[in-house]
Image 1 (spheres, rainbow, N blue to C red):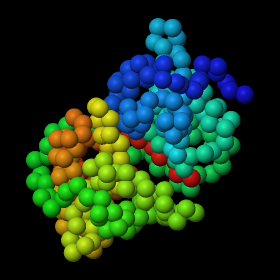
Image 2 (cartoon, one colour):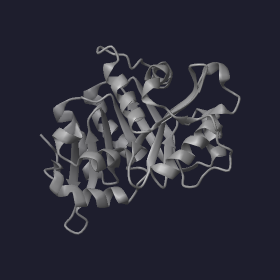
Image 3 (cartoon, rainbow, N blue to C red):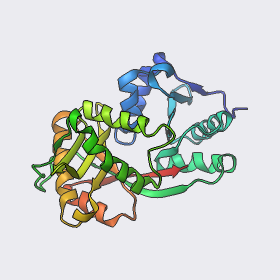
Length: 282
């Protein structure tokens, strides 16, 4: 039984309230906003459910949770987060991760852990970083948007990055069709960038989420034999420039706190920490 009746499935009629809540923190809410702005709130179009929590009569909606391939809670309200955890527990685990602002994810995971069992990995203290100006670090002029004909060139780098970062291969029971489709979609939207030399990817990154107010870089990868040359920082600088020029006024990313080389590169590009994320991987 759900703990609070004020936790509910949202519909298009709730869109104005959802937009107001997402506008309060565009960087933290980017993962949800990119889906909402593209499709609205109806489950069939969204490809997921968006749950909301109604606070008091004065403040209205005080929490959101995207429930799809990933569970993404967004709220500072303890009752909202408890309600989201209750709802997630009631339907059973359908996601491959819980990700978002650390305080929200921690509250939801603390409640879900006894029912959903041990996670494969729990990553706390992930710096959420953002930049709103072009970097003073010269961008790599060889980094450009990937074209559809280069999907087969990009795919091995994407698989390598995913496997290295997440700890499992994205080539699952569907032989990678779903993952390949996602990469094709990003290429088609002009959101996949790479430096390609002699038919091989040396650097690559994607804009995994794009909303009106912010976008988020994901999947940054440098070929192992080229690491330590500054390719990652210069490549990220190029992606930031392209993102600011075309997609959103703020560019963000989050990174594991123990990844000192990446943190150093992002700081050189101009990223500064604006919050903290947490990821629970299954």
